Length: 165
Image (cartoon, rainbow, N blue to C red; front, side, top):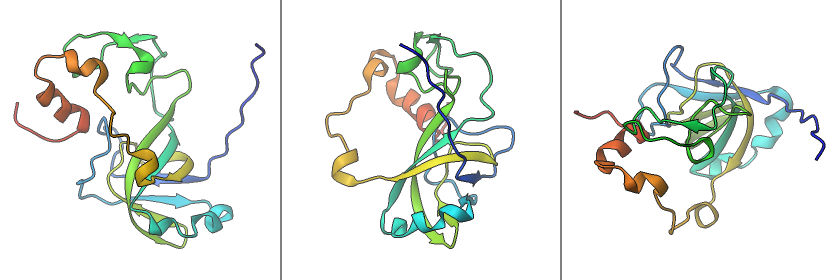
């Protein structure tokens, strides 16, 4: 199969307090200021977004480092190795990230959101509304995480929730 060129446009920029270290996953309760500035030519696309509680944010992980290895060892998984596509490692063949965030408010071209797991200045690729019955899968599971000892503790790491060790 012939590879094709896939052009993407940056439609905005994500603002966070993270410059050198970001959490592994979005932290809904983070108290810092998080927002997305949409480029002016896309402002009309924000119409009625404020009516949703949550949205998917797709971004270009521009600071992801390292070559994408097809087998990875998640840092919190105590040496367990898994396939890249069964992990959430940021080092991927296409460094595209996806986070679900709470929509707090929309004013002009700014979307005020809950905590997101990206560095300040991350390029925004797209936003899609999170729709309750379409996006909530009641039979979702933990996959290979169920095989780990101390899964409850490890899920705190995955979720980026501060806790005692």
